[in-house]
Image (tube, rainbow over all chains, first blue to last red):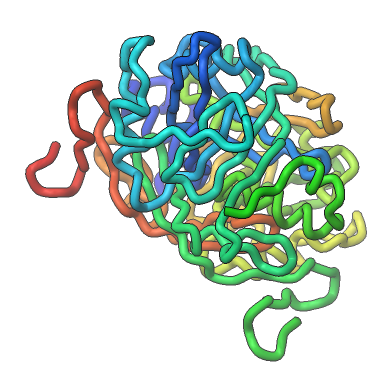
Length: 216
Length: 216
């Protein structure tokens, strides 16, 4: 096995280090975060750091830099409290990636990428019409990660939309039925297929599959 | 599309809500976190919240509850500062899921699940031998998420191990070459395949693939 130490990392060129460190923690969620400014300008940007934070109450978080290309996203959330999280699917990976380009502040990525704004149930922020699983979220708090000057933004999940066919009777959404992708590193888009689903693990019992014969 | 509001979520049964909320944010990383107590007892537990936090310095974070089944993991990290993050691959999803069972404190999940401890370069915490991408990490800080009493643990990445063949010349690790899986919800294990990798997005230019002819 190749071994890379922190000393090796310190001496790497920037892009090489970005590619390595962004891919070494495993697959990331693939989402578009959409907002609307107080002036009514919509904004949409790709994020790979959206993370489940808790189920009761339903909460998620994501990491951002206040001065990154996602600055408009952060400012709109701070000013309006609302944003949406929209899954990226196989059919829209080029459009999703294009949202990372540094457009001028007055230009909406919706107009430049072919993604479509959709307004549902009087929610302030736009959803992405092409997305098959979408969440309406409300800002709750932020935590400054002082080790590298990033922010963890924490929000409640107020609305969930999805095609009914992808939900199993126990509540679980089967993401490969929606064609949701995952992110490998900064710029790789991967399509997962379900291998198996397991029942709650107990000491002294073999893991039981939901699907295979003779189990569960 | 089906619409679920926060009122609907409040009225759901616990397991149904857990399954829905854990799957609605997209795919999660699939890792085993391994530690060793001050007494020398090794511990390993499955985590789906390991998240990239930054590349320079190389940092990751994960979410835990102080009193969850992962309590031993958290206590060992607090007491010793060190832990490892080990990718879960297709070949080991049953063993990885079994680490979530509530074993007695003195029983090591390594002994009960068939996962193998491996010690590399005098690092205090064990790695998982079966894992093909593994990280040696050092505790830096923790942030209490007061909205739901969880903790974000933040750590530096001190060591990275992987098979050289999965790294591209620009530093990127191709995770499907390692057979790394992703988590769908609480208990679904999915195997991603790379669809495409794109160059840095620029305004006014079409997204360019790394692989397709006529691009890049």
